[in-house]
Image (tube, rainbow, N blue to C red):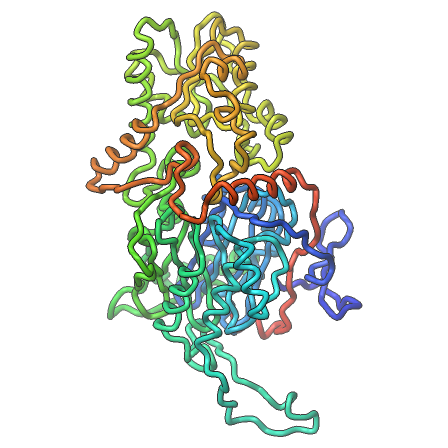
Length: 626
């Protein structure tokens, strides 16, 4: 982003003094060395936007990141492409509302861009790991990624011998460089020099002025040679080399937006459109001063087009709930193994990039915990699936404990509310809200360190004493993973006066690590893996009884919710429950190596100031062009 207070650093890079009381932070990559973390996969939220001509994408990107904040609160970033072809990037540790201040938003200019929110599964706190990443060659490519690559050491070794430098331990940077390498391989070995190449007194290198594309879709310059076929061939090559659960959005300078999804469809990816409505001239004149003051540039020019096909803006995001909350109409999901191309003046195009048929296995934990309840993933309503989970949990409890003495059902907010409400309905027991939630504390499951999880539970939840006092309480949670949160919640219920405290999980016991981007790195951290008997689980978390959902019931809940909406799911990734991994590369050796690496890195305090608040050299003319 542009910084008015920038200065030339001794190393030749720009740095800036941020308007804060803290000491100045260097913004250049040379300022510090990024820590090296292996297999740093991430559970994240991603978004890409292609707006109408003359519009600014940053507002929609920022709103989308706020709507995706539940998927990660460790870091956030946005990169846009200005109308003159310059990449504008801002990313840092923290939540989106803290990372992006008005000054940063004003300077992220251009009609298209991508964004990312992250929580790290490897515990890295370095903002060097924040996304999006970008490379300058070929064309200029930016990328944001949700998921995790399997077999990262071999991919890194291959890239090393393809002369690619990796500055972080993030597998997202590996994925970006793989895509860049494959696109580079499609270029001619000896590109023709631009005809306007006058010699000068400063030598031939100073005279070589290769004309760059100035339009976001590349009507001239090297990017104009990039065809859909070349992009799809590159994605196919990447998919042939990569294995794991991945959803990707990418922006190619002079071309457009590229999005793709792994062949098994483990991680979700949706896209939609919004029709552009011309703004009357009198309304533009009315709001112009306020827009100029807030953003630093005037509102977009009035579009007078009244004939021909309608114009649309497009968005790609991790969840459909983000699309609907920002006013976009859901078109559908990017199918597994497919690439989606968004280019100016052309409708969205889908291409099958999978080299061989693969079973569709969306991650079951998206429905259990991660996704927003208003989202529709692969045609299945998250809300309806959680209702079914609560229903099946209640039926299983009635069968196992017909003479129960439960007085009230209380959910652990927020995710478990839907299942708890349906569970109470089918048990015929009153449902009550028993915890007041502080919404300004992050989700404890995605806290990067165990110490932070323990501390934040009591900061996040406060019991409503009247709903516990003298009652036998059934607490319903979406899952019991480590047991850390559950233990403290049970203790709070007892302190509020509950006579007996029972805990029910809408998910089965989590016994295996997840390798596709969810923070379940070692079996030793999972309470159901360490403690085999359910009565011992109850004893460890301090509950009088514990109930788990059956795995088949969980699968049936999601499948039945899909059938109700006319969708049939053939399978799901349930590896954290059954230990069956859909990619063949995952074996005991890989799991042991991954556990050792992540255990060593967990809780690392490493951080640096790779802030990447870049100054653009276009000055005021750059603003006018954008």
